[in-house]
Length: 123
Image (cartoon, rainbow, N blue to C red; front, side, top):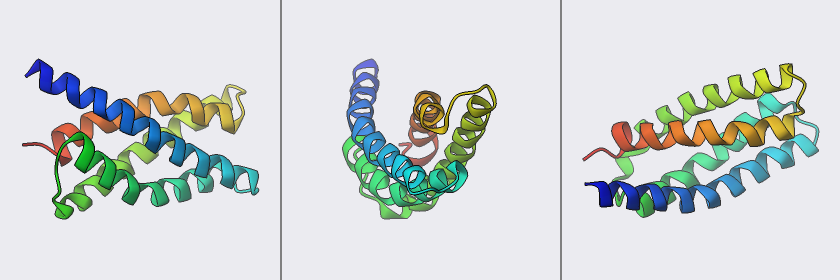
């Protein structure tokens, strides 16, 4: 059990790095284009969900069931709002949206792993 969990966490980290690069790049691009960080985060999240569903489902949890997309979307809605609240708090404390978004990645990623493992891709 420990080996399976540690392998999943390792795969999640590697896949998460790729997903994070894609998602944060989209977020930063939309900020650069003049979008408010709320909209930048929303658009980046929507665009990243399908990409992340495929990579996390197949590479991390070894699932090919496309019917799980609805649960996955629910997880990303929760993660989106947690992420948004974290960024809002960090901006309120004086950080800019780029740094706030980068810092919020860590707790949002941990929440994403837990919800995906125990709600979306459970065995």
